[in-house]
Image (tube, rainbow, N blue to C red):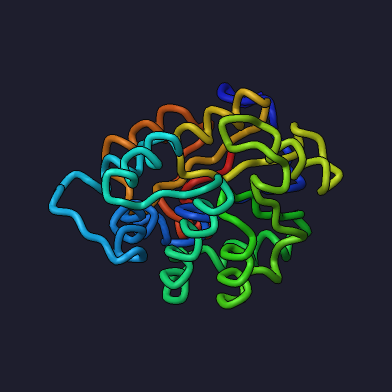
Length: 227
């Protein structure tokens, strides 16, 4: 038994998308400014994006109202949110080494899927554009299960759809709070560094995950083992 988890043989992998498969979190970290620009607004607050990135939805709605941007419903807000970010996915690229790692795992017969908080009308097109969707059995979004990644629903549903037990399934994540959720549900979690993350955020990931890998090349070359 590994000292940090009970899994020794895996048959499936659940991948997060943003920051784990794709170098796209830099855009999400600027979502405040991106949304303001979408509505023809601007701000002089240098900490605006930093604040928005860490706010709850209710807090964001109150902040946007100060700029004259209001929404009639959660759906209207979500639609605007994704319409604003969607163009930025047209140039997003995979994190280096991802494609080769997926190819390697596919050749081993490992089942793979994507479990993302990003809505399918944004996530699926970018994975298809980059030719990555071919490696996955399916794409599962938080909206599909009716819960965010503060709850384990999406990970448990993904394992179920792959017809695997939790103990047969690994989760790849770049976010500390997502890693915490997946581990509490019993999954063995591989932590990867989001290229846009601050050093202190990466340290949290290192501390929480079962195994930290600095990049996909270290896995491909056998310099770091999954277990």
